[in-house]
Image (cartoon, helix red, strand yellow):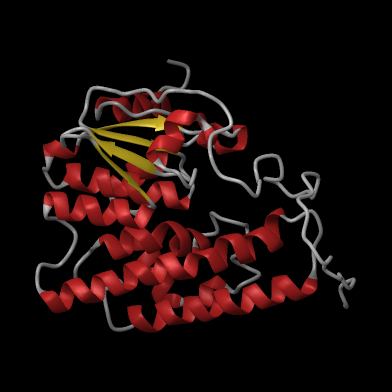
Amino acid sequence: MTDDTYTPPKVWKWDSESGGKFASINRPIAGPTHDKALSVGKHPLQLYSLATPNGVKVTVMLEELLESGISDAEYDAYLVNISDGEQFGSGFVEVNPNSKIPAMVDYSQNPPQRIFESGSILLYLAEKFGAFIPKDIAGRTECLSWLFWQMGSAPMLGGGFGHFYAYAPEKYEYPINRYAMEVKRQLDVLDRQLANNQYIAGDEYTIADMAIWPWYGALVLNRVYDAAEFLEAHTYTHVVRWAKAIDERPAVQRGRMVNRAWGEPNEQLRERHDASDFELKTQDKIDPEG
């Protein structure tokens, strides 16, 4: 099949009716669209996010820190509904001028420290609490190499393959094939690495796993784009093994729930302010008629 030919104009102009799932919030300019202050809870760490793959990275990290006994990692998590353009509120833009989730403020610092970009938040928390990042230079470097691999690779999966395969208003052969090829290459990179390692950066569970799993683990578990069969995800056996093992971790299961606003009601925790919030959800699942 040959796609219709598009001839770019001499000067590109923004067409706000260009279509696609997120057309109503996409725009070629930055900055706030409305005034809205951010809520601030009782804990020093304040997270503003949504349970997309990038958001899940951070909630998994926070829950893993708490699971390991680091009580200072307690946090409040507020839902930012990106479909409604809440990331363009003035308060959110002050924390993240790029208007993307997740964003965090650490009020234990004076002045309070803002942190944006999911990889930066993972690294900040790992260094702040001395956890989930190797202490030796070789291990740390390997971990950070894979962390930055994810930051550079995932846009090809999300904004590339995911957009054209699942969200674009029309299906075009060329971009779907182009990005499918690249995503399969990335899965092969991971599969070869995991053939000889329990986790991404070696035998230690690190922020590299927490960064990569919400994207590529979710992909092979068929939780994003409904594309596991199309990409023959089951053939990447080492990635599947790793994805299933991480999926069983209690902190990961809790992290997936935080700021989730879709799916089964008992799997959603739209806001998180205390560990007991999960207990209430567990009770809802046991006794839905409550």
